Image (cartoon, one colour):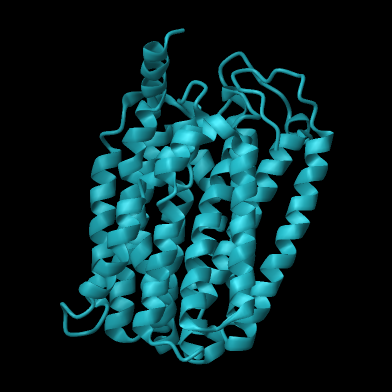
Length: 411
């Protein structure tokens, strides 16, 4: 195959991923506003300090509780209709959260953030839809979709603070903007390619595929889920605790919001270059680099509470999450055939979502100076454990069997 034909084939295989990148961007626009403000707003509205991080944590709880519902909806109606339907959760979330701030209702804010979690559960399937249509470029498809969130990650947090005082009650307009982006997402997703409307997570006609027991004994699948779950718990814990811990360290609300902005940039900026190199250096290398960066983030958080260290930790955990999550997701999508999606995707998402919840809820106890440093040490220790576990899974993996429709990768 000539170089030009290879480029042409690669371009064609990423066509759906490029259409899903704007969907990802719209999702990040909405979620970045929540991520920037919810910790701060929750701190102001919570009846006690112990509940301050609950609204933030309920984002992950909402995503976890709806993962199988999203999968079943995809199985019945296809990716496109499901993505449109769950965009409605973003619309409802923005409006309810705006009312919560207007009325000063902490529990209504909790309801609003729970609903944005439902939207997040559906948007988590963007990368699967892209990978399932990528024809041998799964890893690049995943990172291309994630890269779509970069512009939103850059602009979204600034929109959150810029619109904060457009209405008499601070932050009401910011949450209304979440609903606006939900409307735009619904309209865009309705125009996604028809083939996404036909693709489901259900079994293909006449082909049952392998059982869950067989699929979930694959070391590569286990390694992929382990690394994505680890990335989720480390990132969510530091992101949830970060804004409140930053203020406890003596940093301003503006500094805490800026730290979240840096974090969001770190989460999505790597997609532009990772998509170009991941097929060349492999999922294992990308995942390993990500784990090292997460380790650096934890070490910096444990080492110092100075502003530079706070910013560095928040940025680095974002970059580390992107690389680890991209590599792990690519490993997951390499282990199943089309008719087996429903036996892998929802379970993998549930496991990852469970760790997101653990990270978010556990971060409530870490939203202090001592807690932030202890969290950093915990992240460092977890990095070593994950590295050892993935090395063990790699030794178990047999590199010889060909997996239908996949490249031969090892964790």
